[in-house]
Image (cartoon, rainbow, N blue to C red):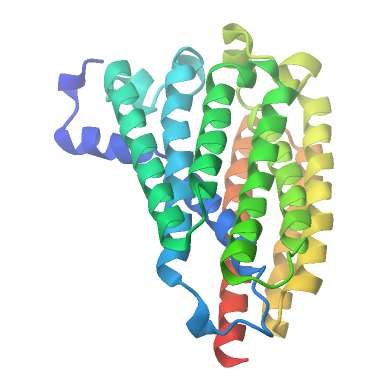
Length: 310
């Protein structure tokens, strides 16, 4: 289908959908989680927090994630003709050339935001270096490592953990106090959970991935074994989630909500062992993304409210 067959509204919308904005927000929330959870309530009050810098951290991480999503769609253009022909590139709404230009622009915006963070907080390049490593490894995943199955999945997990570590280090350097390891422990669990989500993402796409030579676990071992491996990593996430809930939350209401979220992840981990249909696998990976976001926002809000009202 040619681009002229689409309305301007459809084309403009495609430039938003290709960003996978929810994924970007989750990345930003992960960095903010590491930062906020590292605040020492004995030495920091709500008025001490640089909320503009906090927002810029979220924005920078989100932009790095969004540029990676654009390049991911470029790299996946052949398999998406089978697995997801509705996406902007295989449907013809965005050309390959336009997608490359768009990805570079978003990447530059991410670096500019990182520079502002470093200058504003005297971080001497920490944010810029993190953005380059984070973005570069995600782009390497898009074009090379994704086809290598578990090694590509592990790359995503490591990057997720790195976002939490960046937030903790940022907080330590800017606000002082003792370096906090709990956010990194939780980040490691979140990284494992994201590996599980990546494995589950491969369940509905076996046909297109096999055609394109992408060696996901589902292609290599079959859908059922891959679902079991994905479920295992989700159980690892549950361990970190439990640690976070009982060590990081201040209010009973927050703890109850956290426990409900953990119960939902437990259900998803068990359900994918029973049902590996493409529809359920797709639903599971979408629910997990929202679960990650809600869980992270729960901690950020809980901590800031505690700093405000004590």
